[in-house]
Length: 156
Image 1 (cartoon, helix red, strand yellow):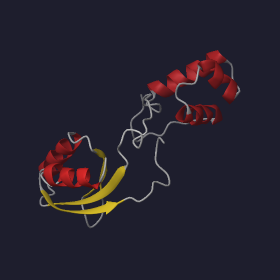
Image 2 (cartoon, rainbow, N blue to C red):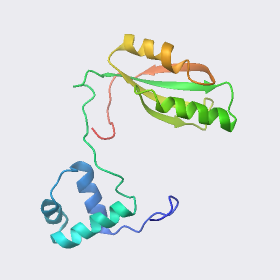
Image 3 (cartoon, rainbow, N blue to C red):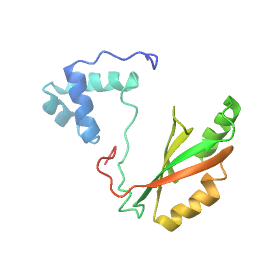
Image 4 (cartoon, rainbow, N blue to C red):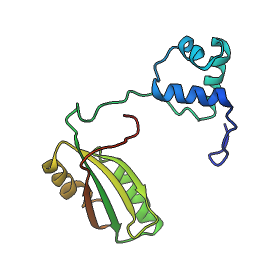
C-alpha cells in the first residue's frame, strides 16, 4: 500500500471504475465491466488493486437523513481556550463520541474547528449544543449557522 502522500497513477479505466462505483457501489462486476469497456476478469483485478491501494476505502449504504427524521443541519464554528496538542487531541476524541456531529474539520481560520451537526429540529440542536458541544474539552465559544437548503451534499 502506498503512503498517504503518494497519489497513485490512475488510468482512464481506474477512473471509470471509481466514477461508476461511487454512483452505485452495489453494481455487479459484470455490469461494471460492461460499463467501463473491459471484460470481467481485468475489471475484478483492477477493483481489487484499487481496494488494496486504499483508493477504494470501503462500501456503505447511503442513508437519507431526511427520511430518518434528521432534516436540521447546522454548521458550528468552535473556538478553543487551549490549542496545544494535548487539548486538540482531547477535543478530537470527544467529538468522535457525539453521533450528531456528522463532520469535524480543524480550520486555519479565526476559529479552530468547523462542525456539521445534524438533528431532527432546532430544539434538538439547541439541546445538543448546550449539553454536548459546549461541554466538549476546551470549548471557549461557538457560533452557529443554520442551513436552509442542501444544494449539494456528498453521498446523496
